[in-house]
Image (cartoon, rainbow, N blue to C red):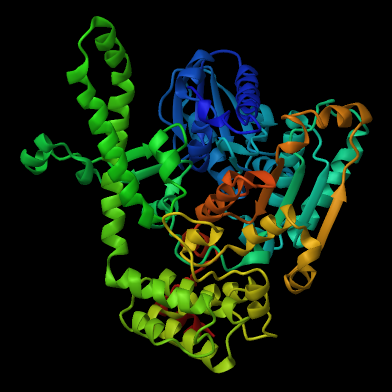
Amino acid sequence: MAASHLSGGRVNLAILREAARKELLECLDKCDGTKAVVWDEQLTGPFGLIAEYSLLKEHEVDKMFQLRPGRLPAANVNNIIFLCRPKLALMEIVAQNILKEEETGGSRKEFHIFFVPRKSLLCEQKLKELGVYGTFSNVDEYTLDLIPFDSDLLSMEIDSTFRDCYLEDDMTSMYYAAKSLMSVQALYGIIPTICGKGDCARHVADMMLRMRRELAGTEPQITPQIDCLLLLDRTVDLMTPLPTQLTYEGLIDEIFGINNTSVKLPPEKFASAKQQTGGPQEMPTEPKKLVLNSAEELYAEARDRNFHAIGPLLSRKAKLISAQFEERHGAKTVGEIKQFVSRLPHMQAAKISLANHTTIAEMIKEVTDSDHFMESLTVQQEFLNGIDTDKVNPYIEDCIARKEPIIKILRLVCIQSVANNGLKQKALDYYKREILQTYGYEHLITLNNLERAGLLTLQKQRTYPTTRKTLRLMVDDVSEQNPNDISYVFSGYAPLSVRLAQFLARPGWRSIEEVLRILPGPTFEEAQRIPVGLRKKRTSVGGGSESPKVTLVYFLGGVTYAEIAALRFLSQQEDSASDYIIATTKIINGHTWLEGLMDTLCPAPFPDTSTTSKSKGRG
C-alpha cells in the first residue's frame, strides 16, 4: 500500500511506518508455519494503517479473527497468535479461547501472545492464575507507539489516557508516550530542546531524559531533524475540546466520527441514480466507508478550512473539473488526444472525490442549518466571551427539560464552568440536581468525575478572563473565508494550546510569564546535548538558517482536529517561525472526551425475598 501522503512533510513520517511494519513482520516470523491472528478489536484500525492483509498473507497469515469470548472459529493452521492490549479483562477472553480450543482436540497448535505496545507483569500473572501461561510458545511485545496518520500527524490511539492519569492516577500511558519519543529520536535524531507545560508533560520529559541517560551514548548518531519538542498537558487547556469544532474535518468528526482516518457514512446518501429508482431492495445497506487523508487532493485542501469556506471551494472545483472534461472537444491531433487520455484517470478520481465531498458537505449543512445547532453555538460563543457565565443558562435549562442527549448538556455546562473558573454554589447545585432528576441518579459518578477532572467545579479565583485577554483567545473580526488568525477554527475562539505553541515560536514564553503562572502545572525547558559533529551538520540542513525550525507538538491527553488545523495554519504562513508536526495520545472531540469520563451506577439486584424471609424465620 502506497504511503506517499506520509512522506510529504519536512520530516518523512513514512520511515516510522516502515519501522513499525518491519517489527510486526519480525513478530510474525517468530512463529513458523501457517498462522491465524486473533486481534483485540481496538487494534484493528491502527494496524490497518501499518500493514495491509496482503502483506500479512505473504508471511503465512491464513486467517484473522476478532478477540471474542467463547470458542475460536475453526482454522487449519499451525499457530494461533493473539495480538492485544495489556488489559486484564482481555486475558480472561484469551484464556477462554485457548481452553475451548484445547477441548476440541484435533491437530496440535502452538499459541503465541504479543502485547501492544508493552508487556505487562499483571497480565502475565493473570494468565498464570487462569492456567494458560505455560501454553504459550511466545510471550512477547510489539512496540507499536505512534502511528502515522498523515505527513504531519501521529497518534498512539490510546482511548483512556486522560481518564487514567487524572481519575485513576495511572501513569502507564505517560510511560508509553516517553517510549514513543525515544523511538522518534532513534529514527530522526536527538531533539535539542524540550519545552513543556503541565504535570504529565513534566513527567514524560523526566522519563525521556532518564531513558536517554540509561542509553549511555549508545543511541544512533543521526543529525537532528526535529529542533524542538513541545509537550502539552490536556489540563493546561480544558476548554478547547468542549466547543463545537467548525472546520470541515472537525465537523465530520463531530457529526459522524472519524476513526483511524476513516469515516462511515449513511449508505443511502451515496446510492447511484439506478439504485435510488430501483426501490428499497436496490439501496445499499452497508455504511459508506471513506479514507480521509492528504492522499486525496480535494480533502487535503478542504479539511482545515472553516465550513463556511467549503461551499465556494467545491463550486470552484466543480467548474475546474467541468472545464477539464470539455477540453476533449478541443483535442484534434493524436498527440493532444493521447495527452487527454493520460489525464483521464486523475480527472475521474477528482470527479468522484468532488461528488463524495459535495454529499458530505450537504449532510453537514443539514445539521449546521438547524435551530438546535445554531442556538447551541450561540450559547457556546457567549460563554467563551465571558457573557452570563455566572448564572444558570435558560438554554441549558430548556435542553434539560426537552431531555436532549446528556452529553450535549454536559459539554455546555463544562464550557460555562471552565470559562468562569467554576460555577457559583447555587448554579452548580441547580445543574447537578436537574441533571440527576432528569437523566437518573446513575450519573452521580459522572458528575463527580467531571469535578475531579477540573471540568465542573465550584468557583475559584477568576483567572480565565486574564488568560483570554493576554493570549487574545477571542477575536472579533475573524475572516472565515480568508483567515489571518487561528481563531477561524471556532469562528472567533483561538485554541489556548495552539496560542501557547505560537508564542513559544515567536516571541518566546518569557512574554507571557504571567499567564503561564496562572495555567496549571509546571512550565519547563530542557536542553539535550547533541554530539559536536552532528551539531555542525544541523545548521546546513534545509537551506541554512533561513528555513523555519521543526517543532513536534505532543498533546498528552488528546487533541482535536480544530487544534490540528490551527497548527497547520501556522505552518503555512509565509513568515512562520516553525513548521509543526503533531503527536498525540488520541484524537478526540468533546463528545468522545466526555464519554471517556462518564460512569453509570448500576443498581444492585434486589435480594430474593423468599430466601431472606426464610433466613429471618430461621434466626
